[in-house]
Length: 134
Image 1: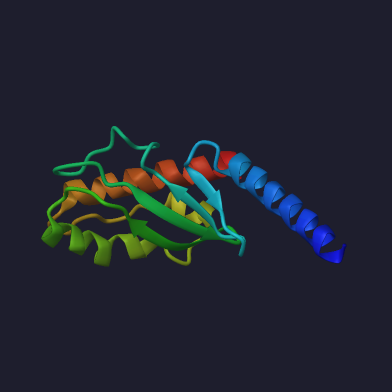
Image 2: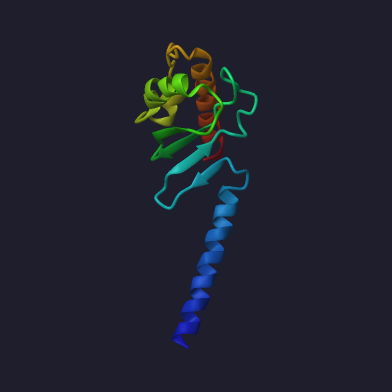
């Protein structure tokens, strides 16, 4: 009898968790992790934002209203030039509050300026989305 009760509780908990995830992740843009980190995926937010060769989507990791990490997603930018953007541009937002990160004027003079500018626009759209949906 205790096993049956435990199974019912487990199934109820899993159903509630799935419903919560579906509500948070309804548009596949923002996902809330168990540790409180919110991940904003800019793939659909910035379909029209292009670097030199392609779109430059990001995953923006936010915890306690601070940008923890910015992760570049798959794109068709030149790997050599985009590596510079990853090293020199993406890290500039890390550790900043969302409010401060949104107001930053990021220098994208890296030799991959179009890619850098596209990354900045992705950040703006992602942070704006976070602010309006948190």
